[in-house]
Length: 434
Length: 197
Image (cartoon, rainbow over all chains, first blue to last red; front, top):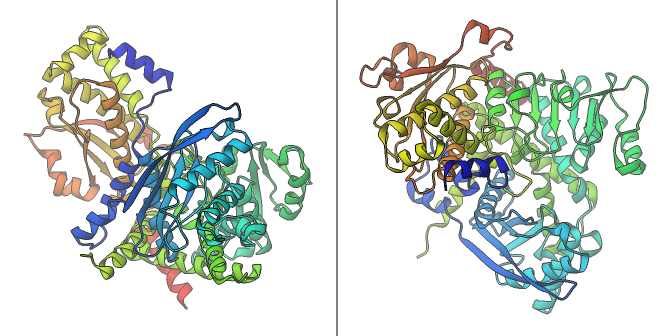
C-alpha cells in the first residue's frame, strides 16, 4: 500500500492504529514488576488468562434472516475465588479486549479484597440495531454457549457496556432452564424482582463518596469546609454529589451533557436530583436557583475546589487542561477520565489522583453482596449493605494510600501493585498442580 | 477499545499513526522525492531513509513531551537515528531529562511507545518494523548533572546525543509553580500520622 493510500486511510479515521489493550495490560504489569518481589514463575502465570473461550452466536433476526456473531468469555485468574466480570455488547469487542478487561477485573477485585477472581465477556454486536426480542434471543443463545463455563462457584457475569438488569435476568432465566432449577447467584446486577440487591444502583456513587471522605480525612480537610465539583450527573455523579452534600460538603459545581453550573454557596443537591427526574431529557438544563451561573466544562474541571469528581466520560482531563486543575485531589468516579499525559502533569503538580480501579469499585463490591445474599437465600437490609460497603471501601483506600506512601508511587500504581501482589500470594499459596 | 475504557487502557493523546504519517510526508519533502518513492526506499532498507524517518518521529514526540509542563527539561535522540545506520527493525534511542522519574512518566512513555509502534506497523506494510519503536530512558536531573546511569550518555562522544527539545525561560513563564514529589510524600506521611492518632 503506497503512502498516499495510507495517508488517506489515516485521514479517514476509519482505520486507526489502535493499541492492543492486552499489550497495554502486559506493559503495565512490566511496570508493576519493578516495584514488587514476585517470582518469575508466578509472573508467568499472572500474564496469561486461565481460559479464553470464543463462541459463535447465531441470531435469527426479526425479518427471519440469520446472522452469526462472535462472543467471548475469558476467565483470567480464579486463585482468589470464582471469576467475576461483566458482559458487554459493542461492535468493537475483541478477544484481546476481553482478555485485558478480565485481567483488569482480577486486580480490581483484589484491590477491594473481595473473594473473586477476574473475568469478562462480550459479544461483538451493535445493540442499537437490535430490537428487544432480537436482544433477548442473542442473550439467551450466548448464555447457552458460555453455560459450561459460568456458575455461582465458577464465573459470575454482571452488566457492563450496553447490558443491564434485563439482560442479566434473561441470562439467569436461561441458565435456570438449562440446569433444571433456579440459579439466581449465576449473575449479579439482576432486577430486584429476580434476586437483585437493594443498594446496587447507588453502590458505585456511594463507593466514590466513601473514598472521597477517606481522602479528605487523610489530607486533614474538614468535610464541612470542603468544596466539591462533580462532572457528570448520572448514576454515579448524582449519588456522589448527594451523599457528599449530606456529609456536609459544599457541592459548588455540577455538569451533564446540557452544560456545567456553578454556585459558590453550594447546590441543594437533593433538589437538583428531583428536578432532573422530571426535566426534559432528565438533564440539568433549565434548573434555576439564586446565585447560580452557567460555566464551561473546562471551567468546572479547573475550578478551585478541594475535590474534583469526574463521573462522566473517559479522557476529560488532558494535557490541555491538567496544568490548570486546581483541585487538591481527583477521585475518578468514571473509568479513565484522566489521560496518561494528564496523569503525569497532575503527578508533577502534586495533585493526588484516586484511580478508577479503587474509586469506582463500589459496584463490584455490591455485586459481591448480591451474590452472597443469593447463595444464602437471605436478603439483607439496604443500610446493612451500605455499612459493609463503607467498611470495605475505607479499608481498601487505607491500604492503597499506605502502599503509595511507603513505596513512593502514585495511588494508581499502588492500587495495581496491591491487587497484583494479592493475586500473586494466592497463586503462591495454592501452588501449581500437578 | 470498545467503550467504558478504564484508566489502564486509555491510549496516549499523541496519535501514533498520525505522527508517523506526518513524519513520512515530511521525509519525502526533505529528500525531494514523492511519497511513494520514499516508501520504496524504506522497503529497500535504505539506512539514511530509515534514520531520517526515525528522526522526524523523534522530533514530533519531543514537541509533544515538551508541552507537558515544567517537570520535563530536555529530550535527546542518539544512536542509529543520528548516524544514518538505522535498519527496518531499529528502534529510536532517546533520553528524557526530567525532575523526577515518576511512575506516571514511565506509564506515559510506555503508552506512547505502543501507539507509535502500532502506527509504524500500520503505515509501513511490507516493511519489517521493530516490536517496540522507542527505547527511551528517563534521566533525572541529578543523574544528568552527575552523569550517572543513562546520564552518562549525555556526555558520550560515541553516542553524541542531539537535543530535540529543552525548556527555556519563555516556556517556564506562565507555568504553574512546581511542587516537588518529596513535598507531596511528606504531606502524605503527615496525613497518615494524623489519621492514625
